[in-house]
Amino acid sequence: MLTVGSTFQGKAIDVDYLGQGIVKHEELVIFVKGLLEGETALIEIKTLKKRFAEGFVVDLIEASNMRKEGVENTLGSMDLYHMKDDAQLLWQKKLTQNTLSKVGGLDVQVEDIITDRHFTNYRNKSVFHVMFKNQLTLGLYHEDGRGLIPFQSFLLTDEITNLIIKHIQQKRINIDPSILKGISIRTNQKKEALVTLIATKTTFKGLTQLVQAFKMMPPVIGVTLNIKDEKRKILGSTSHVLFGSEVIEQHIGNLSFPVTDQSFFQINVPVATLAYDIIKQNVDPDSAVIDAYSGVGSIGFYLADKVKHVTLIETNEDAIKMANQVKETSHFKHVDVVMGRAEEEVQKHDADVLVVDPPRNGLMPALIQAMLERPFQQVFYLSCDLKTLSRDLGLLKASYDIKKVYPIRMFPQTTECETLVILSQK
Image (cartoon, rainbow, N blue to C red; front, side, top):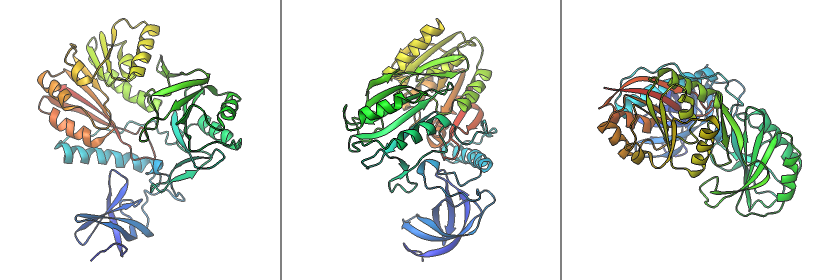
């Protein structure tokens, strides 16, 4: 009988949504971090519950051909890095199919995954944490949550971000790590950067030296100071401009979006654009569209030249402000920008098509009810969580047929799974 600390030899039969190998032993399911399907290993039990256990690899006895050779990852932000890139695509497609079936009771065919096959250096925004040292040292979280690991470059961010990070750390600036908590960098296609210092106070040791150092870096067009007012949130609600511009122009297609340090915008624009193209190719022309959870309106504006009317619905004031700027500069007279909750506002506006891109917890029950009572001709559901997507689709199938399901490889080297689903009224 297995106990905490005991070891056994086991073989993984699958990989779950957290990237853990699934091993069965004595009628017990054991989740093993970093173990790939088909691999055999000597496993030690770390935690033991009534129905399952967690273990770790003591010795990898037989490796899978899905494993990258010579790769060892210690970062929590790259929890699937040990799996080959093409194997990650297959894993996500299989996981999508299985989750839709198990959670939503849906028997649907999953399309080939949306990817641009750029598996590294794709992020246009990253947040780096300040380690508790007197000289500025940036870190990323260890895979087991033990703390921060110092680094000089990050495989997932673009060249400009890594250049800035390396340069600022080489300055060896003395700071107060009890106040300065992080640095966020957002870049664009023009290779410009907006840098945000995240701190609990408006002044702290090293602030002047940091701003001066960033001023000397040609890519940096602006530096802001964000006041972290809640421990659990990365960014606070208030930012101050320290240098240059408070916005950076992001582009999707021919559209330009003025984005601030607090704006939500797609982190992997090329892959997001591929998904938007699928929506645009399939949306009924000359239809009226509601883009709920619209953010700055990237999807709605992208569809605006094909449809007769677009209504953007969003709760974030900063995003509403940016959307109105885009509407004005692009002269979109047939686009309305509405501030409010999607589940309330969607019932006030006539539309043939609904686009939803909700947060991780999925659609609110009131919105699902509204979609069932007054079905739209088409629904495009962009999701960042397979379980809540499957739950919602299981409810929506009473009034809608699922036409297409596209996994999106938005964040390679991670277990994050984005999905686009196209539905039509029954």
